[in-house]
Length: 322
Image 1 (cartoon, one colour):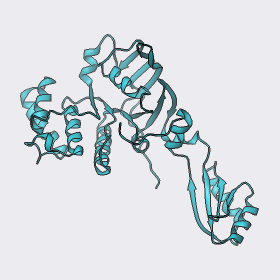
Image 2 (image 1 turned 30 degrees about the vertical axis):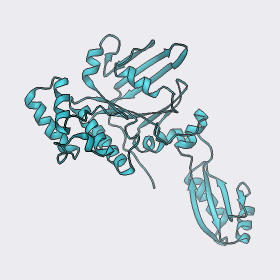
Image 3 (image 1 turned 120 degrees about the vertical axis):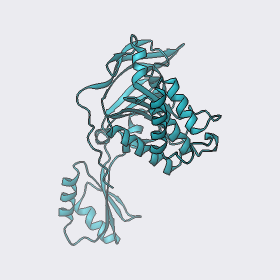
Image 4 (image 1 turned 90 degrees about the vertical axis):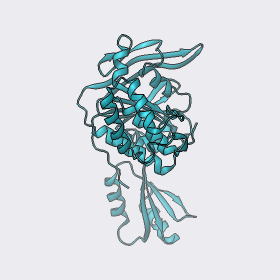
């Protein structure tokens, strides 16, 4: 299926600008000179194996821990000198819920409003609005201990939005969720960006980054090892090919003679032909085959983010929850 993302609606303004970010715990260097720029209104995904430093970046950018070195601006504020202002424009949610199971869903939202110093009248209105938006009206008076994982994650996101943040850090937001709940969270993320919010997403799920992100940075051993749009990253990896399936061995032999650059599989009656030029390569292959060779099936294979991840980190992608 052809998957197209609309262009991000940001201008040239940066929501986040990071230069030379370093962080160590004792002798362990967690971030080793990270440079990042995230445009306003963009979904920017940070990918990387466990321990690569993704969560450490989020914790630094959200003012929870200090960096050892580097300069950072968030929505125009200097992270070191204007941390209070940074906290006023960001929201953070992650794989570990901030929800209090002793309160109802509605009470959790109202409490968050009080913590964020939202005026009482606006607090009530905003709570009602968020409960409706996140499809939690029926569960508003119930304790989140009774919620499904997807419902609890939606409440977590609603609490994050209570203060109307302009920049949201989503640290592995769909870890442990079932496919339907993941799709719901994805839809919410897309709606937020349409409203002008900027998203920094960390994830282990490569399909999540592929579906959502305008740009991706791959982090490995505390360094950015690749950066670009999903399409740009996939184009960097060789291996695109056209897979031709034939009805019999004679047809395969004819095709292999006409397409000597192909790799032949006699057992499966398949010929794989390199396809580095997209549709132009396909037209060329079909023209060279002509009408006389009986092709039973044809498919085009391009490298995916799994291939990119393996190539730039040397690690298998980890799709399981931590």
